Length: 295
Image (cartoon, rainbow, N blue to C red; front, side, top):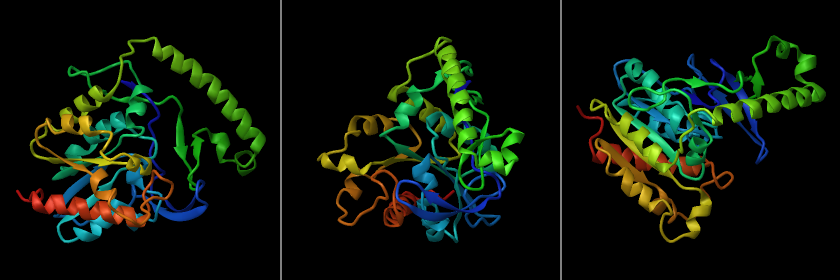
């Protein structure tokens, strides 16, 4: 079992959300599973996209790169954008295991943001595991949800009362209580069977996912804007290690996006509409060139 935050967006959500860093709003619609909605038609191949906030996208539904990819492949495939802000390799693995039988995806795309995905693993602790030392199920440090305004909130019934929900004093007390317990729980599980977690573990997780020969995998390397100050990708060694995994394709966006002259980012990390359009184009190119949707 992995000790970490594990949450999804509210199910069947139709909301306009304000992105706090840049003071602009975007529309979020979610389906009955709590994932961003795309056009889905029975009888077409499914493509499952795993990732964090870069995949989820701080843009309108159709301006995410899964949204653009859906428009490109509308006649061939259904795209499932299962990105959730704050997720990492462990959540990608668990969600894949949960949905692989239900969706039977022809392709799985894993978005890897190397600026923090390894840190997310390093902040996790192992309590239980299967025979292959992979995570079995998540244990949340905080019972939480995301409300219709996009805020992370406790699931307690008291939060349904508007006067309490909007109270800054109550928010302060609630956070202080939560943080005290979070530190205590974190310290407890840090002492229990903790293992060093690094790039090596992420490779193990991804290799275990790719054992499914019925599904083709694309590991998508997503650079931050700050990485472009380097001549070559700072993740070159990791990318070479990824390529040793069977049954996968690696799409490193560093050399592709570094050449673009227009702004591709909202905040240097998350992609704007133009950046997402380029990503979708490159994904479609590799899907088409490698005939990944063919039987």
